[in-house]
Image (cartoon, rainbow, N blue to C red; front, side, top):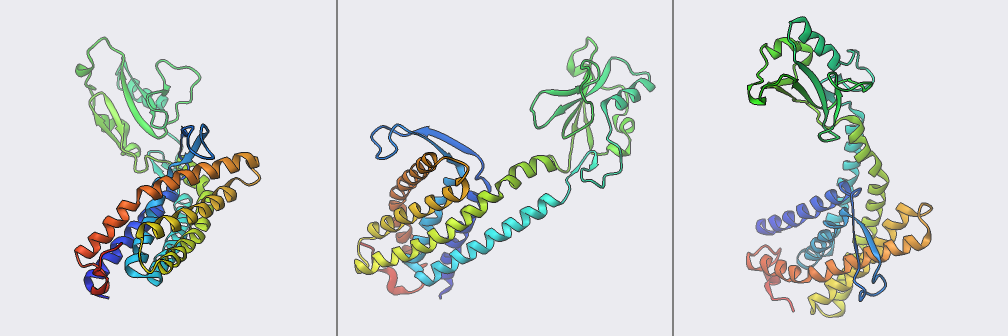
Length: 335
């Protein structure tokens, strides 16, 4: 294959693999809308869909372009590489969850030996130096602006330092810009809190791991079943899509690009929707809700398939215009 054609092939394969990995990683966030009443099967119903569905149609556009320009064998190769990349993604996610996060408390894993530092201890350091009217408080990064520990005002709250920002609260009646700490903050905190950077009256925590173990595992650990279901559905749907595409191409003698694009993608997306929803929610949701979710997902994908037809024509034209096809004979215009 010519060098220019190899570049085009790698470009499509890269877009395909990037979209595939992305849709698996963001699968746990959902959005919803109500279908217009005139839409068949789902009119008036509430659709709740994973945001992973947004980049997924791009993978079918890429396989259709690969099939059209580079042939079935090379399109199949990209699909199998996608499966390998997805498996590697699962492996590295498992490894990432096993490695304890580094925070200002030290290693947050079970072998952490240093006891956690508290705002109470820091307040005692202030008092020991005769500093009054100022105290430390802890602001949770996860819960935005809610102070989870303030030794000056809260009672009964845990003041253990966690992920977020350490605040130096000025309780004097002075403007905030004039409340410069009258001491060396770095010396006060000591080497065990070297991750803290003084910025005026506020100490912002420069955590090496702003996302800790609990949050990371909650996001990525809970998505393992979803990723596995998506991978299995992806493999069957893409394999089916490539063969349907070439079936329609042979049946129409290479004519009607729009027909093979939509006929292959729409039917293969039905297979994908049935597989991924069934694998995820069989035994969890009632059958009526499963059927509704399949119908909503498939209708959304149909709209995406119809919308990407102009993009397919544009992609084929660009590849032929810039001579990225494997053979010069493929520069004949599509019909």
